[in-house]
Image (cartoon, rainbow, N blue to C red; front, side, top):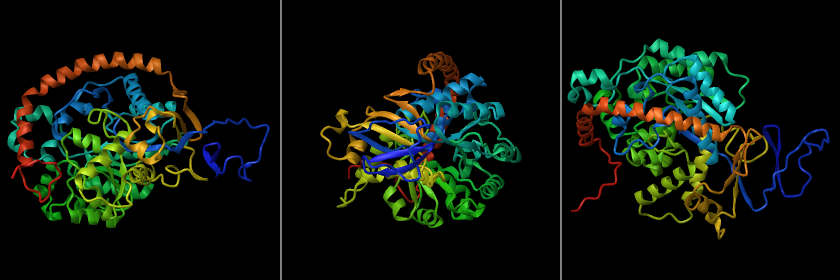
Length: 489
């Protein structure tokens, strides 16, 4: 098949050698570029539907930390004020890794610290510079950790709590933070769109969630939030949200956020009736299998979510909890986790094809971009990835879908096109100086490791208390299990 692109848009998909669409006549005055893709696999760019760029410098620094403890080391407000250059470099590095793994769109749920325009502008400029398509949301919350994580108040001494739990910003200032860039409605950045990012319903007051629901309606924006990522979050729902049947989904419904605009990340510790409610509302879920395993969070019930009508997408999550931005890893891990979660084979079902759809169309739908990206057809944005089928992963070539998901590791990705612009060709990124970025990151990384050592030392005496709080939640019955437990009878 031939794919013809005019500007940023696909205008023709048809048999090789045909003249092309009538609407795009040959014009000798227009410069054209032809990429020979015979023997290649051309596919829509991957959509990384859940990611945070703010903690990239902490990649590879953690193991054996559940989410509620991991936050002490990963969130940017645990560290000193970064420079503008630091923010630019970390954003570019995350975007570079996305490009090299065939990701053309990313949803960056950004914790902006400090919350200043100069930092936000730097992030936007970095994405613009490298050429990645981004759906940006500013992650906000106005409930303290001790009031949103079960048993912290019971187990952590006041002198330790004062060090690890900072008072939240006012609700009104957070709503202003989120709305101010929306008023500008960036018109010069063709690859930028916005979403709203409440950190999680248990971390947000009713006032904040209702304010964000209002912004979502007024600006017609998608809403992305974390939901039931860990068992402690299900425990917190039972303990604190009795007025809503112990359900964070019903709490979201009561605040006006539950509906087709909403996509929740993780959705692991969700009861069957909550899945049905989520699906009936038209909401979606982004599964992040790699980070969910590394942070000991559990295995999502993907088949049950799908059966309940929940739209499904895939994400890679933070660089410090999955350590990689690779949708190929996410797809394979998702398929294998579901395989060991259900012993019953399903004739005619292809988990690989399903995972590819989640990583392309599913992600675009989750982010409100389903009319722009995720498919190769006329009228869609030209966000394309070309893979080399001579790579050992595709030899012998028996199945594009299964070998992409189960065999490929990223070696074959040679060309990436975003918005009709070639941003990587023959494995060389065209938009930034990679070598200069490497030098900058190596210097920045050395400084960050020194600071990380200080943060680790400062938090050392808190670990035993937080581990006990986590253990109490783990031992609480919430009516379901999302762990793989091997128990001898």
